[in-house]
Image 1 (cartoon, rainbow, N blue to C red):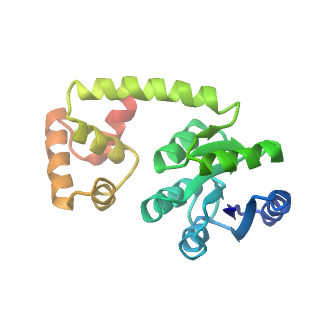
Image 2: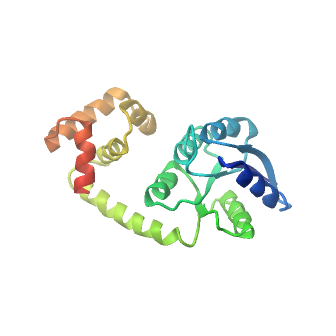
Image 3: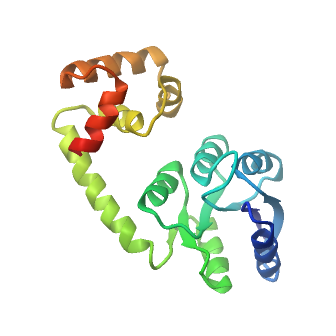
Length: 209
């Protein structure tokens, strides 16, 4: 039996999904959460196998919740189910650890199959999402190749996190290094690019890559 937690800020959506998926003999709906913060809490004590995660919610959005759940409970699989297919959300969710990204117009049988596949360790992408991911992966690869001509792999990771708005503390936690080490890296990067602060670095990334 696959234990499923449904996360969506719309009550009717949660209830509808619970009703439809509850008809599947191998799926058990163990809980429902109305936002990302609730999802993180419930993931801890409900111990679901798969979480259906919406993207735009109050308190914590889907990307933030997915990142936190992936760090705290790496065995829990997150499958995004949302109405939004913006590049930023797709990339953010997958980088945060989501195992799949589907849109809410997916038929219930496709959704059930995707849950089973994700539980088995496979990545699941909706038909309209797949070409976006392929394109984004190609551009991301080129961007990293450009960065690596100048910076080390670790410096590239830090530059990317600064550009996403991560604080020194968050970068340290993400990369499992000390805040002092992060500060030293950023100081070196800024000096190399002749930039004044991390805000200018974020702008530089946007303008040059």
